[in-house]
Length: 185
Image (cartoon, rainbow, N blue to C red; front, side, top):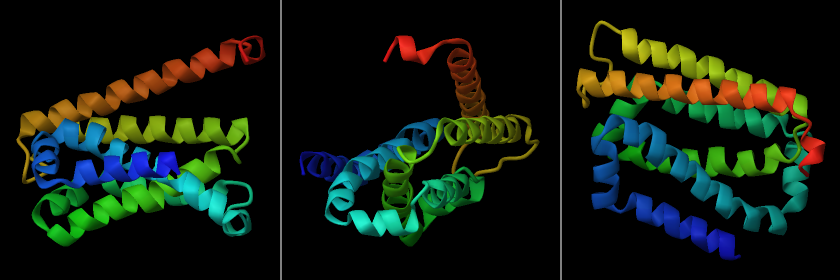
């Protein structure tokens, strides 16, 4: 119950208009801080529902793949420049951003992560590495402004943030490949 309260408080804090406006005023903070924090709030809140309705999650997400696919679809949607623009201009899309990232991404991520085997987790890391490389290259190399609400320099900064994240994931994958994690558990 305590995690649910912390997640709800985090979600409410992120949705307070001055905080939301501040975080959305800088493109990289919007994409790489606010959105992951909303997913994390949903991740924290999911525990209460998983404890109260265990058969529901067992029934539709037995091996973790359906939940991870939903997570990937939602996160993939919010990496698109158009969806970020719409969230800044349309109030209903802004509400959908908070609902989809917390409930449709955070909840399934918490339930699915423990159900996935190590191969599934590595495939997910590789997928996000490729996604972040492609999207980072798109934001850096696009000859035009992709988001109407942000400057081109902010777009380039976000692209470099995506590339840096992809490099960090690659370093992590190399680390887990060449180390014996059983020695540390």
